[in-house]
Amino acid sequence: MLREDVLRAVEERLELMSGLRAKAHLTGDFRDEVIGAERRSEQEGALGGLMPLSNEGFWHVLEREEQYVLVLDRNSSVIRLAPSLLQLRDGRGNLIGEWLPPHRAEALKGKEHVHFLSDDFVLYRNVLPDSEPRVVLPEVEFPFLYGTEGIANVTSASPSVLADEVIRRRLGKEGPGLLSHVVGFDIRADVLGPACRRHRS
Image (cartoon, rainbow, N blue to C red; front, side, top):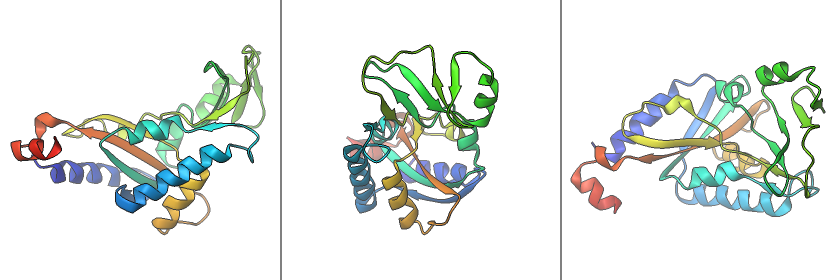
């Protein structure tokens, strides 16, 4: 099996996703530009610099061999199924608050330990932060590629606002109601032919 065959299978699976407006293999100068935007976002911080920002999920995606960027509409199942896309954590990693998808927000309504700042963002009253909070963009499970032949260690994440702008501009999807997502995975060495394995090493 060739690497190109694996990537083609991945792209065919991505095309089946509901809410997908555009996709691209993240390589070359496009990849460099997105990474640069993510680094600037972390340097500038969140909420106009009021809080530190850490996009943990994005850097985990970049640890994989291959990355794709997606542009999705807000009805995409990626967003609806994600347990959390944005969190507030203290210096020890304690979860102070987070953005919640509708199904999780509904389940927490009326709970004494939960304070809703909005319909979809909560603070947890039973967690006392021990240091300055920071905004964390976590890894997001990406079941849409599970079972695709030849890949392993699938993960995904939301990019920062700056990186989202780069991705959507590059893909010609700058309109309202759209957001981007990054997906990463490894290609299993056992499915590649000998020549591909030699090239990989």
